Amino acid sequence: MKIHWPDIVRIAEVLVRAETDSLDVPPTLRRVHYLLVSSVAATAAGYRNTQGCYKGLSDKLARARETGGFPRLTDLTRRVQYPLTFTDEQDARDWLAEQFMLDRRSLFTRRTVIAVEKAGLVPLIRSRFGWMDVTALSGYSSLTHAQSLVRYDVIVYAGDYDPSGLDISRDIGARTGAEVVRVALSRDQVDEYALVPMPAKGTDSRLASMIASEGSAMQVELDAMDPAVLLDLIAEGVAEATDLEIQENGWPVTDDLDAEEEAIRERLREGV
Image (tube, rainbow, N blue to C red; front, side):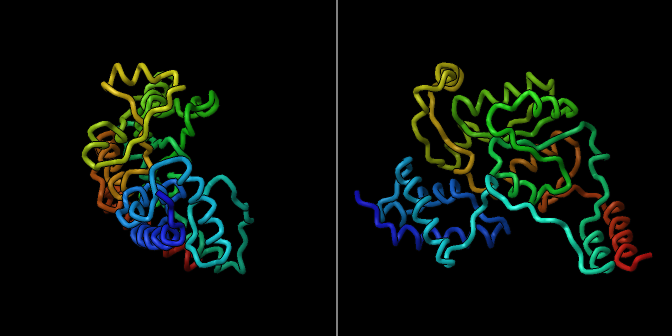
């Protein structure tokens, strides 16, 4: 079936704006792909869960963004580093007051970090869990990165449901000695949320292991999951790991700290 790209771009724009408005974080290109795969209108226009469609989408949306009409997407692979500057002392005090935060990690019963498989999801995770340590493993962690995670007792982990994605959580636990609380993805979640699978890569050396442990092999990317659902699953994992009560906004219930923090911010604004 021939893809009608003008319709696909229009549908993608509506979906991107809706998700950005809902979460205050733009989706990644990969996430847009899965939004379209799950869209009846997009599939009717010929869009499918294939690498060819994904590459075509990348090209079409790049052109749409060049015209200035298409909303921005999250891309952590290429960024400009800007110096931090201020117009005057009050401007600096206002910035510091806005940034100031007391360390709620001191309330942990066990030192905990949130880890995701792909760096593109970090802005989404930090939008709700900005008070916590967050990292991307970017596949199998390097020795340097693994050593930096040795300090943690618990890793709350979300990764792809595929042969390597399943093994990554085992690997990082073995290399750090931390307990890994895997909150996504699982086969039950693939079924519960009707996530669209692709055949597992036949070249993956861990294919047989997944078949042995899961009964079958497939590839379902974490980007396919509704971000709001993913954030809720991570909140449940954090609550389990830390014994803290986590609010709907992703922050722990810390009334005394909240009041102290706001008082300090006010003093910073006033230059006291």
